Image (spheres, each protein chain N blue to C red):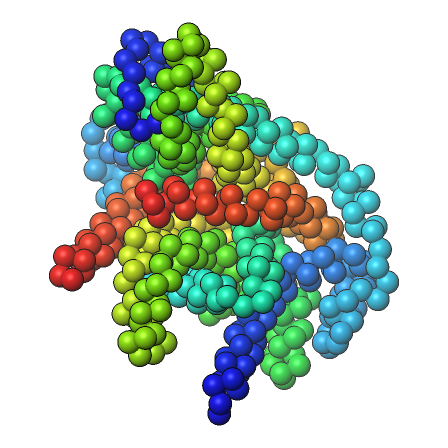
Amino acid sequence: MGGIYIKNKWLPYLLILPTILMICIFKIYPIIDSVIQGFSSADSNFTLDNYKLLFADKTFWNSLKVTLKFNIIIIPIQIIVSFIMALFVNVKIRGIEVFRTVFYLPFCISLTISTVIWQMMLNVNNGVINSMLGVLGLKPIGFLIDKKWALLSIILISSWRGCAYWMMFILAGLKGIDSAVYESAKIDGSGFFNTMFRITIPLLKNTWLFVLVANTTANFLLFAPMQIATDGGPQGSTNVLMYEAYKSAFKYSNRPRQACLVTILLIIVMLICFVQNRFMTDKEAHR
Amino acid sequence: MTLKQKAFTRKVLIYIALIIMAVAALFPILFCLSASLRTQDDLFRNMFPFSIKSLIPTAATLENYVIIFTKHEFWRPIMNTMIVTVFTIIFGCILNSMAAFAFTCFEFKGKKILYPLVLISFMVPFEAIAIPLYSVASNLSMVDTYAGMIIPAVADGLVTFLFIQFFKDIPPSLVEAARVDGAKWPTIFTKIIMPISVPVFVTAGLMIFMNQWNSYMWPLLVARSKDIRTIQIAISQFSGERSIQWTYIYASSMVSAIIPICLFLPFQKHFVEGITAGSVKG
């Protein structure tokens, strides 16, 4: 229908009104409100006090550190693992549909439920994972109660489901590559790794940009596994900024603090996504 | 090695890698299923030291399922989630497709501002706005109501975008012919556009379903009372109770996973195409 634009005075407005209205109320307004609240004092005057208070708070700096650490580990892991999964699932081999379906399954289990299931499996006293590690002669590990392990365990839990999700996008990208490209590479004698790094990965540029940006956003704002499995502990080792924001609003009833935290988080995410965008498109310009 | 042998080895290696990944994907689900079919005593007693009995029930029972549905009234969160999901799908499909129809079919003032607004809205992560959104919901007295879970999720930029992508490919002659015959716009939309757009409605419905069925943060904030809490909240609260038996949690997790699995697997192609249209192509 592209191209036929019919002039009608009121009908198009009527059609878009509900959607636009809801987007403004439930999506746009909350962001603006959040930013304003961070800069407002109790009597609604402009102030920087909320931010000053926050920056003087050790918990904030710890949360920032945890958030950065968490994302530096989880983003590459998720992208690399999903890419490997997508590559394998894209091979034309008998029974591949079955494997593809199996790989999608974790995505059907919500993050809440995967966290709850993994939490029980990783339990130090009755968990099946520790029982299995016992076969190797290892002592039970407090995956979710040991400061050394908690963040890594959360990464495992989120990636188990996450990789299934991101794989779908990368697989869709791989399917979009013309098979003739591979054939001519083969004729030219290009090996597996050469084809992968010189052809497959560069051709997926649009996919990478989307997956990188969406994955960064999702992981920076992730907090359900921490809330359910560790409550930000032990000793704040999984207390990411988003969870601190959640607690500020609903545990400490400190709305301005929450607003500051969310604003800072959004600025970090926007900056990173901007850099990623720049980096990915820059490369194309040089090509 | 001959070429044939080489191809064979390659195949075997690929299968081994696929099987390893499949085990990693399936293990938690199968373990959950197995644990949901045994008593807690049976589960714990056979856990250490590790043996095949740690994984497989010695005597399978449906007791856990019976108890979560009778004693813990687990049907209630399921019903609540169903209500929320079904209404979001209905309103979401109607309103977003209407907006998409306007964007593809009409020329109107302000379109250049409103269209990007829709696109931006799907880049705004829900988690980031959930807390300020709570005050909006509370001002509209939507806290602890079904409406509070349904209405904010109805307008979805991604779903609108999905409809726009599909409507763009509908041949204009179809609409023009109907116009010549004197059909009114509502008729054109319901009698011509909607019937040929069934696939995109399926995709959109499935996307909304997955979002709503799995959503956690928003219901956690807006619907905390026991009567209207959804399945995800019920299970997370279940797991927080000290006295609760693990096997009940495993059983309830199975129940809440089975419905999305049954819906997703037959339509996986639609879903993947849908999210792809909204991301990679966009």
